[in-house]
Image 1 (spheres, protein in one colour):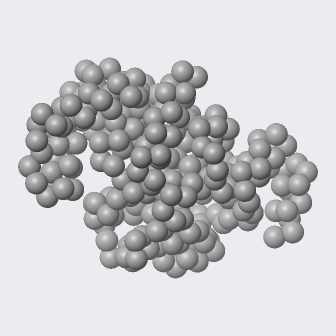
Image 2 (cartoon, protein in one colour; image 1 turned 90 degrees about the horizontal axis):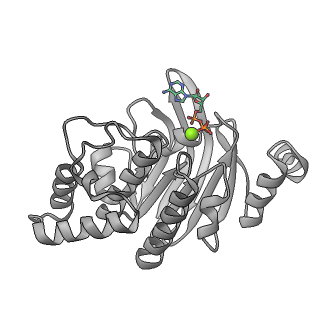
Length: 250
Ligand SMILES: Nc1ncnc2c1ncn2[C@@H]1O[C@H](COP(=O)(O)OP(=O)(O)OP(=O)(O)O)[C@@H](O)[C@H]1O
Ligand SMILES: [Mg+2]
């Protein structure tokens, strides 16, 4: 579904990502871990063609389409959703306005307002977001945790095929992590999307049975493994024991 080959990404003339290879198929969950500043958020944003980042080498394709000549809007229309580490505030446009327009473009038809409102209410209930948020400006004046939930409202309404979650769990309180984890698991069971999870913590991973784990170091994936690798890292750290040894052997 998503194939990233030999990618090199620069920002302000500095190489941030290099030799980056990753393949994610439908229904697969991949977890990206790594020390602060190793390029995890950069790779997420580069997939969506964030204007701060230039792809200088390599390729990204999604569902057989090369993303080279596509802009962010076109890429998201293909079905990729990024829940970013720091969601952007958009003052003056409400969630309902954005979502109604986005859905009518996505499905190429006028949105049935009754169905739309019904679904909005269902999703708000599912993620425990007050219904009043529907009429609030996108992420504007929301707390860190509220922004993450507000982004999830968009995710569940737009029904993407590839979900990129860049530290969804940071900023969420313990109850919110449970609500969000259960909602994501439900989404996964119904739609079987591909998911890329960037995380420093195990809490969100507890809601998924199986996943692959990749460790990034200085802009590239240096180690990949099964879910036990996440456990090793979370108990011993990136610098200790088996992880460091493997990283050095690479
Ligand atoms: N727009 C930019 N311009 C210049 N440098 C940038 C830019 N964005 C990121 N960087 C640099 O690239 C490196 C990787 O940043 P990135 O945000 O991808 O790290 P990360 O792995 O997501 O870290 P964290 O775990 O702290 O979220 C950092 O050194 C950062 O300072
Ligand atoms: Mg980051």
